[in-house]
Every structure is written in C-alpha cells, then in structure tokens.
Image (cartoon, rainbow, N blue to C red; front, side):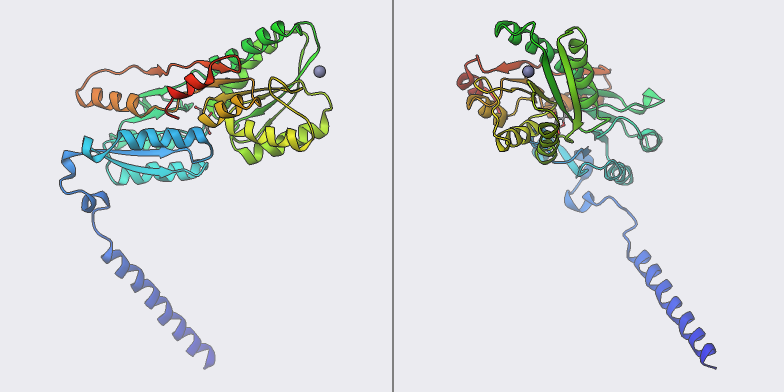
Length: 342
Ligand code: GZL
Ligand code: ZN
C-alpha cells in the first residue's frame, strides 16, 4: 500500500513540474528580440552584436571602450555587448544569442583561432555577416566571415626582435651570450602565435641568443608574475624578458623586484613589452621597461567604416591592418603620451 501511495505522489509531483514548465513556456514572449522594448522602432537602428574576448588587460578595456564610443544610439546603432570572460564557450553562446535576436551584424574578437566553424556556419545560414576584430579564426570555409581588422602580430614580434638586436649592438653586447625568456599570451590566440613566430624569426638569426624558456601568462598581470617567478627560480642569468603584452610585463616587473633584481635601462634585465598602453609608457618613463611595441586597440571606427560600406552594398577589403609603431626609453615620452588616447 505504502509503495502505491508513494507512486501516486511521485506522479502528481511530476505533473506539477511539467505544467510549471509549460506555463513558463506560455509566459515566454514569442519574440526573443529583447532590444525591441529597449528601443522603439528598431528598424531605424543598425543592431550590432559584439562578442568580446574578456576584460583581461588594459588593452582589452581600451578596445571595448573604442566600440562603445563608436556604436552609439545617437549615431543610429544599437550595440549588444557580450564579455566572453576569456572563455570560448561564452563567446559561442553570445553568437547564438545574437542570431536569435536577429542582429544586423556580428563582430567577433575570437579568443583562440580554432573551434568556430559550427557557430559561424549558423550565422551564415541566418544571413548575418560576421566581422572579425583584433584576433583571427582558422576555419575551413573562409566565407564564414566577411573580413578582419587588426594588427600584424608577426610584424610586432619581428620589430621587437630587430629592436633588441640594434639595442645590444649600441650597448656593445653584440657578441655576448644573451639568455632570453618569453611570457606568451593566451595560447592559440592570433596575438600569441604571431608575436612568438615573429620574434623567433629574428632569434634564429642570432647564434649568440638563447631562448631559455617560454610560458603563457594568458595576457594577465597575475599569471605573468607567476610565470616570471618560476623563470627566476629556474635560471640565474636572464638577460632579456620578452612580454607579449603590457599586463604580463607589469607582473614580470613585480616578480623581478621581489627577487631583488632590477630591470629597465638602468637595471640588469632588458624588459620588452607589446601593446603600448599608457601604463606601459608610464613604466618606461620610470625606467622599468626598455621598449614597447604598440598594438592599436582603437578598432571601433575601422569596423564602423566596414559596416557603412556593407550597408551601401560596397565591397570591403578582406584584411585591414592598423598602423603601429614602437616606443623606447630614448624617446620623448612626455610628448608621445600627450598625443595618445589610451
Ligand atoms: C592583441 C590583443 C591582445 C593584447 C592583450 O591584439 O588580442 O589581447 O595584446 C589582450 O593585451 O589581452
Ligand atoms: Zn647574461
């Protein structure tokens, strides 16, 4: 008898749960265009979905701000912004959400190069153009994205290597055994791949340079510091640290100080970084960084220009590089910083 009663109660419970679900289903608004109640006639807006990598670095914050400053409602845009928190699955979810909401354009800054074919195929089937900003994807079908705007990461790595060669010559150290470690960015990201490959090309031409080790600090200060601490434990004579972004350089500087060593033009370790954020130029002015290779985060206006062309039915370049330069401690940093907005 007890079994029978329990069975009946169980079925009742199941029935209640099921009807809750269908009730929720009925409440679900038929349209998922959430922004429709945010803005009246959404037809007058170009609705843009932006799947951003995360907020891992100063560069990333400046990059996000550039898009928020560009895709404003008073300029006829409605920006749906999703922070991927440095996880590919979050970015894939965001793209699916944008497709559901029938945005006009999807902008993707892919945290890593692989794993995008399926979701970009869904965007293609939905007829939504995908514009890549900053990093690149590696996909079978190149029609899965319209175009890409960003930096020539390999050139950034080569410029850093060429600068180091010239600097060592100036310092009369052209023939000295030079021992180097590298703090890499997020592995499999275009920025990490390009910068590592680019610097490597110069490294291989110098028989007196040795790359002691490379480790990924994931473009963050905390992990950059951890990797540098491990290098300082492992190697007693590090001459150069190559950091694939500024935030890892800041972490490396903390680790070097904590180990009772010094870096920068008056120190014993040569510090090279890439991004060129204001904080890095400040650190250079303080004598802690020798050289910073700029990586321009202000991509919003270039992506807007592309969208405007597409709206007019015009062709757009498949690849568009941003202009970049490097800064070193011998330059007039005051004047340089006055002219920069990030
Ligand atoms: C480079 C960009 C990198 C920056 C890092 O274009 O993808 O990601 O160098 C950022 O600071 O985290
Ligand atoms: Zn040495």
